[in-house]
Length: 175
Image (cartoon, rainbow, N blue to C red; front, side, top):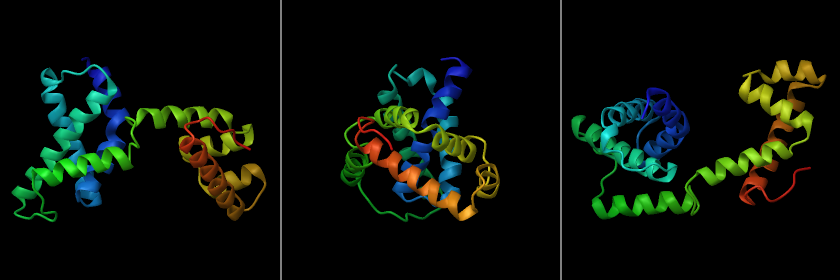
């Protein structure tokens, strides 16, 4: 795996690994540090990566993240979450069923991409300005000629519509 391919792997999975560490019990800043440590260890052990598919890579990274979390708990002589291997397996199953919803996470990403394509142009531009360009509600309000509260309401409605569309895995239309 080239450095560029590893960077793509990291970009693709970093949010999932952070959420997984938070689910295991890490605090916000600790989860950020542990996610970084997860990718450092993953990079150092790329020769152990046996999977070429995204689902296998995600599971491999979660395993590393779990070990990093447990080692961090041991090193800090604390264990905010007391569990045994059976409970870890149950946590992994719960994660897959409730967060990945029977998929591998990539089905949700693909559904979101499809749903974003179905948004009306104005709504897609608002999403792009807010999330891609990092514009504030005030900047978007000036662009649209509406109030900041109007932008807040519009973003809330767009996110709700996207959520409903993704739940239907991109099969529902957007209005």
